[in-house]
Amino acid sequence: MATKMINEPLTIPVLVALGTIMQAAQGNLKITWLGKNENIEVGTARSIGDQHGMFLRGDLDVRDAYLRITSVTGFEHFIPIMDVVGMVQRGEFALDS
Image (tube, rainbow, N blue to C red):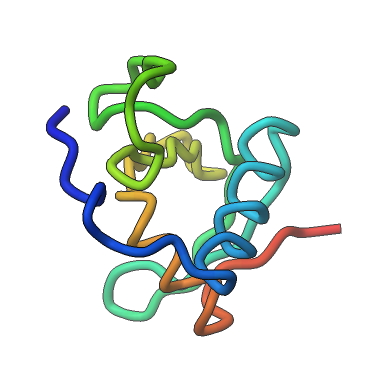
C-alpha cells in the first residue's frame, strides 16, 4: 500500500470523520451507509487495513487504508478510508445505535 496522503493537510473536519470511522471499526459497530447506486446499506464495521482485509501496519498513513465492512447479506466491502471520510462529512455514513 503506497503512501499517497502524506502531503495533504490533516484538517479538523477530516480528523473528526476519522474518529467516527475508527470508533466504528474498533468497536465492530453496526453502521448504515449510502452505497453504490444510492442504495442504503447496513452492516458491521470490522477493521482498518488494505483492500484484501490485511490489517494496517503501524507505520502507514491510515488515510491510505480501507475500511472493511461486512454487510447484513454477508458481502465484504473494502472502502477507501478517504471515501468514507467524505461519506461521514456528507451524512452518508452513520453509526447505528
